[in-house]
Image (tube, rainbow, N blue to C red; front, top):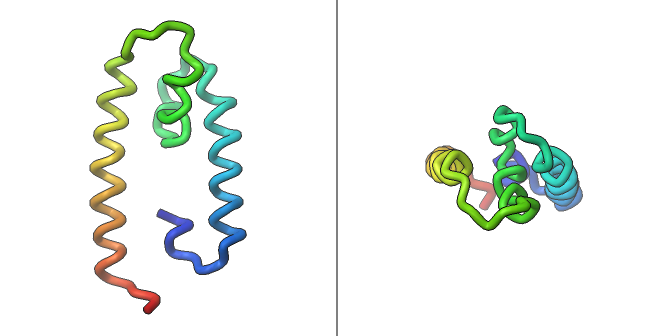
Length: 82
């Protein structure tokens, strides 16, 4: 959401790279608070040692998707760059 408000592509790229590396580092941990980071939710199934579905990750990912969609939709309605 933050990078969508900025017109500079380097800012967007920096957020993506920092998010990817932080997601890779935090996804190896079992601390539940790290699941707030959306990059961790994407990386957690990829680095899991088992093929079973973690319901905690699935539910939190669904809730975050709904929240980010609603906030992005609202921000898109109130401010336009065009």
